[in-house]
Amino acid sequence: MSFKWVILGAGDIAVKFNDAIRRIDGAEVIGVGSRSAERGAAFAEKHGIPHSGSYAEMLALRPDAAYVAATTDAHADLTRLCIEAGIPVLCEKAMFTTSAEAEEVFALAKERGVFSMEAMWSRFLPSIVEMKRQLDAGAVGQVKHFEIAIGWEAYSGPGSRFYLKELGGGAAYDLFVYCYELAEFFLGVPEKVENVAVHWASTGVDETETVTLRYLWGLATLTASIGVRLDERTVIMGDKGQLRMLRPHFGSDFVLRRPDGSEEHWQDDKTENGFVYEAEEVMRCVREKLLESPTVPHDLTIRCAKVFDMINASK
Ligand SMILES: NC(=O)c1ccc[n+]([C@@H]2O[C@H](COP(=O)([O-])OP(=O)(O)OC[C@H]3O[C@@H](n4cnc5c(N)ncnc54)[C@H](OP(=O)(O)O)[C@@H]3O)[C@@H](O)[C@H]2O)c1
Figure 1 (cartoon, rainbow, N blue to C red):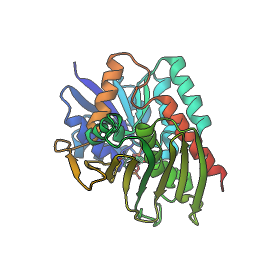
Figure 2: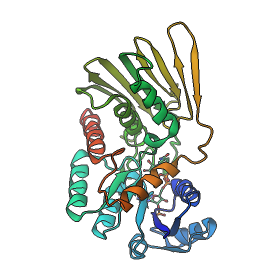
Figure 3: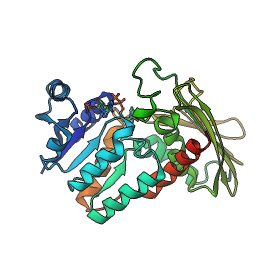
Figure 4: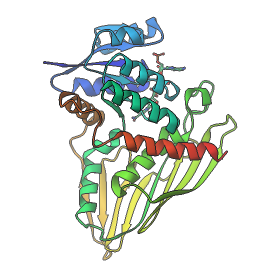
């Protein structure tokens, strides 16, 4: 039987998710929810979705899962709405803006027995998975240092969701979330999070931040920005070589560089829409009656939200 999705929020990222579901055999988007009936109807017509309406009306269709595609400020409330309706939920990153919010909503999900997951799609990308496999197989020897930088010049004009505090703007929720959740993917849970340094935009959101994670073997430096185009990359430096990936949250390829200068290149030639994998994971978890995904567990989202707390407290 077909796995039925609804999308909550008829904005930009909803288009990519709808396209991803169309690529999965045995899955379909049956409805799109919007605060605006006209926007929802126009989105449904343009993207071949049979139903549109309010968020609550879409949950009343009793889909197998909902994808929350609204701006970050609305994530916790919409996730709660899904859980209270008993509908499994995949919520865009950053799923929560504080750790208190994360703990409260995940506790509710557990109590109600409803699956929930942050849409950290990069953790499922073949290139990321393969780089982790090579790391674990000893490709670079003992890890000595890690760095990751993700940043670009986001639109900063009137109404920009990136720069408005009330829409959940700022680099942390939009991009640092990748830095932290990919660092943990490769390296595991840090001993300590320290050296949180933030540059604040005039609108009050964090425009750029650098955070240092302390591990037993050394340090990891994480930088995110919505104000400047960074040299987007992640590098894992070990005593026997380096693994280097450009644009790590989209990661299509990476290089293993050895001390003698030789290189091995790994390329993902098959991925056309990287959201397919996270959607397939939700479908698998729901079918297996899991309450969380082992690849993006609740504790990961909570630990990342605790770093958001530190970033926000540093003001
Ligand atoms: N995974 C990725 O690669 C990726 C990429 C881009 C964005 N994202 C995430 O996806 C989310 C949405 O980003 P987007 O670029 O799609 O944003 P967007 O187009 O600006 O807005 C998405 C939708 O949010 C809904 N919304 C709910 N409350 C709102 C409010 N108070 N003000 C404005 N809109 C509100 C609106 O839907 P309705 O009015 O139709 O209900 C709007 O269409 C963000 O959390 C972002 O971090 C993820």
